[in-house]
Image (tube, rainbow, N blue to C red; front, side, top):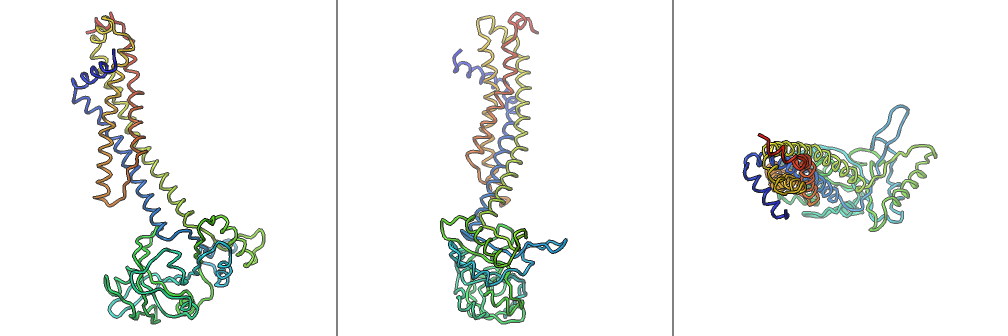
Length: 405
């Protein structure tokens, strides 16, 4: 028989039991749709993490104080006092380092004329907007001279501005109190949204780090140093230079652990996205189990079909049909069921991903590889689970089949 005739006979047989065929294909529909949605949600989460990492700036390297060990107690990042402004000045001289911002963070109650708000106060250098690619909505950022003079000036994040002065208000020139110190507002930072690691980047106030040291905390050390490397400079090279420099400056013995940590945003992004990818494929694998269940359903229905059509098979064989013709007839029926279910499942997957994004607000990105993988797997399941019933039909003895009641 020609492929056209084989396909026509298969479609006729499936239409003869349309409800049964539809219910059989339902397992494939659910399986394919579930795989596509799970992968789409995972890819959406991964894209969201990457976007948030990029929003923190490019070529960014962060040096944090810690982690070190004193006896049985291991101190966490930021709990040690080993980083100093002199360390930042030395790092700024390294080749490949383009911008640098020492950092000291605290959390304070902030009061304006009409409201108060508890927020993070970031002590930073004048290069922070360049490093973080963070533009201003209004006003101006502080200058290196402001940092050297420990000026009491503040640049507000958008959320903090909204809480203290109201949405859309330009507070430049206004006075706020951070702790018990008056600060003059010089500008408002543009919105950046939620950070990749959790906190809202806009719920902050940025002031010169020297001001936080002297006026708010009364310390001489710094907690972190953020740098931006020149384009094309590999992170590994910069990291090795910084590590060697700080170990020398901190007089660490050869067998002593680092009392600082050097991390890049790309490195953090890699960890986050790899974790998300693992979870995505784990969820997709769980969803793919329904494809196997659908395949078992196809095998079951095809075995029933072989039993119901035993006399038909015997008649075809007795009038000259070859074993291969019968095998292909039933195999094509199984594959058509799988492919039809796969096609509808792809459409259902797109619709479900869209619904997840619109209704639940979760990013869901349907990718071509997820569609091809699920559709291809559906076809493979049809061939795999359809082969045994088809082989059983082809191996029937014509005389026995004609006598079957």
